[in-house]
Each structure stands twice: as structure tokens, then as C-alpha cells.
Length: 77
Image 1 (cartoon, helix red, strand yellow):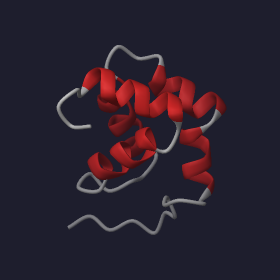
Image 2 (spheres, helix red, strand yellow):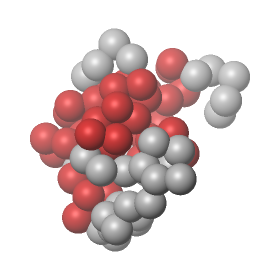
Image 3 (cartoon, helix red, strand yellow):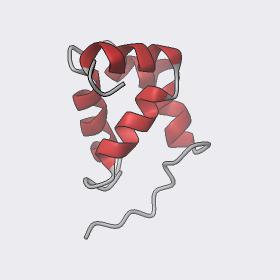
């Protein structure tokens, strides 16, 4: 099992990066924002098994992310 020492939850620098500004722009403007964000999180050191859940949390953390999530995943709220 992959284990990361990276602090990536709410309040962390990584969280702030992906929910604001340049970090958010990297995935929010993608044709497939959740898939792009998940891949970027893994590249940043988030364990592969934790990246999908974190991608969902990050997307749902901002109004723009919630709108994108709803648009691309209409049945998942």
C-alpha cells in the first residue's frame, strides 16, 4: 500500500493550491476536470488510492468546482 507523508487535507498548502488560483485553473478549465485533477494530485504525491476521494473533495470545496462536478457528474450530486 502506498503511504504518503504529504500533508494534503483541508487547510494544507496543497489544498489551498488546488482550490484557488493557478492550481484550480489547471483542472477547472479541462474538458474532464475530475480526471485531470485526480492525475495532478497523484503527480503531486497523493497516494493513488486516496486521489479519487481527494479530487472529489477539492472539486466540491468551491462554488466553481461544485458547478463543474455537477456538470460532469450529474447523477452524483
